[in-house]
Length: 269
Image 1 (cartoon, rainbow, N blue to C red):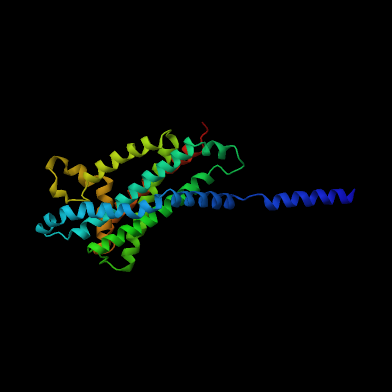
Image 2: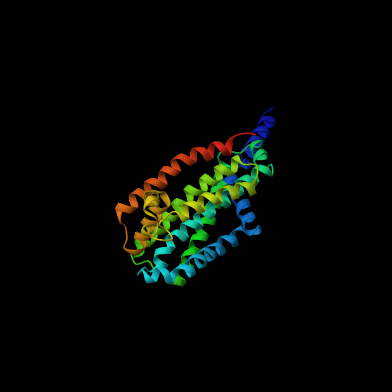
């Protein structure tokens, strides 16, 4: 009898030993998402897209801005970095929507996996996407003359703030993608708002380049606030008058979008 009990205890112990932990589940799903990102070409696009943004806006406008005494490489790069973060959000939405339409989300919901693990795994892939794209954008900016004049600490703050904005936007993108039934429609729906907000901001041209009646919106919308704070970080260092409102905006977006992303991720069809 004692031998039978000890055998059962050993069996239970072995089952507990091989039972996957939440960390192992996150690591496996993150690896899967990263492999898919490489195989599908999304990571390559993350490297190429900033070059397209940089050349597409810098080359046509640099001479006009130089006539106004503006170093356009310094002026432009914050919005280019923000555009790459917006592109990361679109990719995040597509990734979440594809998991839903392929049945992967429903399959994971029937397995003994922590409810928050799939969202965290997608967020990990989104972070890698944002990091790679941001590094590429800064390298392209260096080629056209962009420099961090505020010092190493300000450069690190620039990089960290851009990733903070990227996290906020990709969290929102993941929430929208989790609620969508069409990856293509999701990407199209997200492209238009980011284009409108980008164009109606002081990221590409100074506020004085807009008509008087729309300047209050241009000045106070989040993209302009983000771009202004990043511009100060790159040029002079930390300027709390511009950085603090930008951080509050980013943290406010995160506070709203994380609960939405969690709810959208764990809901059942």
